[in-house]
Length: 428
Image (cartoon, rainbow, N blue to C red; front, top):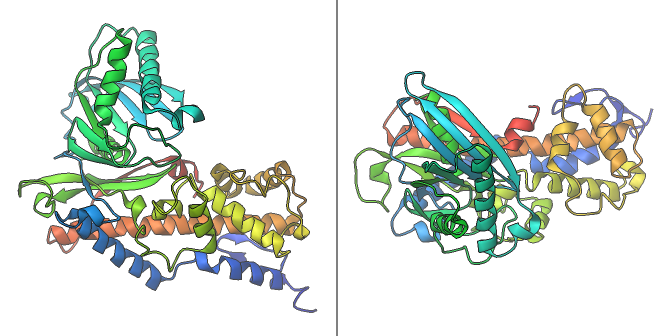
């Protein structure tokens, strides 16, 4: 039997490739090899990230650091004694959430939580900033009205998941938009003030004091309410980011040496100075160039849900053009940017229904497939999501090791609070 007729009868990266011709599998693996990071490459990425973290913490180098290491002015994690009624806004993607939360000290748990999800239309995401904040204020007003809360003035926690320069807990200046937002008139402005002005324009309700945090900080604090060992928060969703509790003596941009402060790393910008060029693939470069913010948030574009599906699509197009998939025949849908959604990756990788999901997705994309195509598409998805997980793991380990060294410990144990749709929806 010739090599072209020999079928693979093994699992590759956990994907069943039984029945895939060996030579065809080898050629696909060659295309996917740049996505597989060796242990040495992972160590080099970790070393570069640690260097950039230290640059971001220093007073005179943070302005040019790709990893911004932003002080949050959050000085401690919850201790379980918190109580009362609070409002919360969570803005960080194409939807935002409004919540009413009641905490009870004696039970150390959330006694009551009502929430409502409000979509943000594309034209609002890319329109004037005033329109965005008016939309948020309107949705908050509708929520308060439906819960009979308009007569109360409650403190509000505002989770705003974009890079900001925090001046104090209730004052935060937007550095840049990410994740598909490009509202005018907001960069360089205090987003807390913009929210308050939008509420006052309505004049039918009011809010109390406002504390603004990044979604990573919100995740860490939420986890820390039940687990006081939680000192790291990580998001793997539309975007990716992490925060952690840093020793104050290392935070050179804020006065004081004692205690700790939560640092919002903004690690999505890692590599913006070209330090990750050696592990970027041609597909990563294409995704960056065709994004609405080329040249920035390099690390995020290799990991997060906003881009993962598009990287998979580009790889599938290339494999099809090389006649390794679908008998060399693409479809209009597969050639359309943004058409292969990141949720497809999770659905394709499901252990039980993955094969059937893959068949349905390929059919909906107008592709003519056979059983070999299905297995190879699953292999592509597995390889790319594994790289995403690998990079997150390397970055998380870098932060934990930095905390260990800063505290002069031989061993360091902590809890990590994790959230985000890629993390919660992915089957593995």
